[in-house]
Image (tube, rainbow, N blue to C red):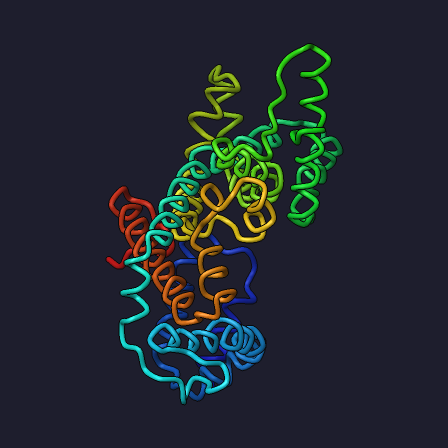
Length: 337
């Protein structure tokens, strides 16, 4: 108990020097090692109680549904349930890997993911740097609110707005007709579909994605900018030598997370536009699992497709994190020394 009291007294001191902080942290670790698990539980009971609802939600909505992955190894019948459906072994996976439609959906997913990674990922970074260069606080808040707004729109509304702009009777073709030029209905062009959905994703989500990068820029020491300006560095040099290096850790972290979700390119967005461009251009892993699993009442095949996607995503995120460690970045977690 005396050690616990000493810990509190140390934390209530005034603003300590860095050396005092380091000594304080070493003293805290030594105190933790001396405390047994009951004293630690008593000391941290408020924090533990606060984490219980979050843990309950994670377990209920993230881990308990994982039990349904067992249907990938069953001839699942919803009338019989998990416990009475016949065991299928790897038959669902054999059917999945022998289906040309699955490989076509997998190829489409990879191509769309690559296009979105190249055309979408740099946009929030550029937007964050541009917003940070706006000196007026009111003007910056206004622009932030404007670019955040599309995130709250549904995909139905986003597709409708693009239809009004790029559809056969939309604004673009109206201008083309006025200038005696041929019409181009981009909304029904399978060849332009991957760029169309990327443009929709950029318009809807790029503004929301700048939040993390603005926080990274705010954490950069302002004295660095003042010192660079005093040495004659212009705006571009300050951005290249201070802003981008200061954001590097967050950029790598977001890139690792993006690679982990590389096979999640969207579901509602593709489902809405599937009839307009056809399944050849719009079929991805998520829509394949829905049409060939849920709609066709072949739950085992759909679950096998989802499980395959989850395993590939896990491999991608571990490989990307390993690559980040190789280049000296923390990635998702700090490498153990």
